[in-house]
Length: 507
Image (tube, rainbow, N blue to C red; front, side, top):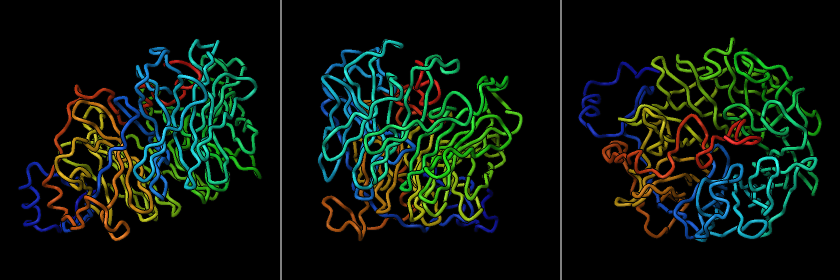
């Protein structure tokens, strides 16, 4: 969207004078008098190794400020570089963690010197992920992983479907229902191994949710997710047949919503032959992306649009005049965030609310932005990226904007560059990934210095004016300094894209 043409010449001159400032691009009615809270910055640390991560597009931060993820230990990985599916391509064993009230707790693994990762934590602390189990997958000659659930310090092996060798859990609700994917032992012509299926685990039983008519369901497409809500509804995507489309090279792929009453419901698409779900809320609304009619640009760069499904209707949320976009997160009010291209094919974070999609802009000089999460108060977090789609700066957008660099709201002199804000809870606490000056990645938690967090040690309770924050632009860490670049547009799980090929075959 264009800026309000009635913006005063004086205001424009002030903004232009801030040559190194963080400024809003293409936003309606920017209010540069916006004020923000300072934040207390916490580096969540590691288990003795150099790096730590969390998973994007999944809720790994609870409303009580508990964070889940995984971190390097100091133990050499005996399987490196022959890593398991989803494993961090690291010479160290990695372990899942929970961070709570200043303590980083090692959630452990199923056996021995094995890696584990946590992807999702429910608001009552149930944590879903995977662990190596000490065995080798004979079909791929890599360490086996099994879906696991951590509860009260105990780890439970959820098993696999039909004797398969691999599974991973990606979502869990407060009732202990777990959703994920598992490989079975049925040969599959599309994934280069055996079939992939979405499962629901509860009360000790793993259920195959089936497909929409094709061979596979689960982590398909280029950015699909496995999601579950508090009602036990599961969203993902599935092949609808076994006929390869010449444009995409795969069978037709549609998003689905599964529940106990109706089974697997095909949510359809926007006219193309490929689409996936990325998120859903507790009202059963589903968001994701779908190819445009004719599968334009496929197979190398398919043009896709973000969608919102609810009440039986799939709605195209459109772009800002460009080729593509994706819906990434949705809150229970039905507000949607993600990214969409403008007429110059510049990628911009968006907020869709009450039928109106707003361009949230970017932070100069970086050209691209992506919104990663929205809480119940409408606060939005995400990142801005360079022309190579590598993330550099974490942002916050609130109260009508403009977008602000989160690095400008933490104490100066921090060794951690906040590169990617991934989650924000209903208390306004923000979690994401940052970079140390040596290129190592770390997880961070930001706690706002506000009335809900009184008397925090090291907190500055004075508010920051938006123009003051804008003048504290973050220095950019060079790509060469990064141990593992975080690229925008393709989900990265320690260097391996999390998509159809990442589970079912090696990339």
